[in-house]
Image 1 (tube, rainbow, N blue to C red):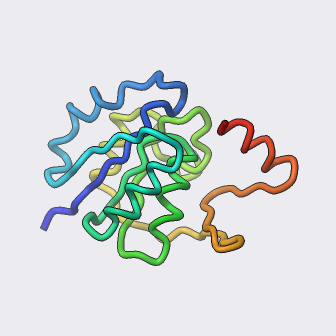
Image 2 (spheres, rainbow, N blue to C red; image 1 turned 90 degrees about the vertical axis):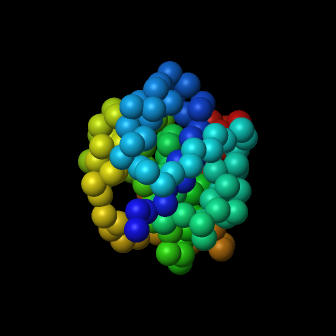
Length: 146
């Protein structure tokens, strides 16, 4: 059976200078059982993940570290895997995992990949992947997101 992929695309990641839809059109044959959903507001990737995680084998964060964290924190302790197509301005976690920064190359790699366990941090009932900040660091992150 083919894996079921949900691509959750944040169209404003990285300043919206990406051409993911065009790249995906050329590569979607690699994912015969897929759906693409576009986020419309902060927290939407988390909402979509919570709603659909039991219906898909892999939920793919198509965006930056914020999109990755929204999805990853929502699939902790589930049978759903995380995929990443990095489109943000930093893409720290994707770079650490050596995921190509080109959407088309990342899609190629994703189509051949297998899940690997990742560590997460839990603070006050909230899971974090890659980074969490408090104090000034948290304040800067909050201001950036607003």
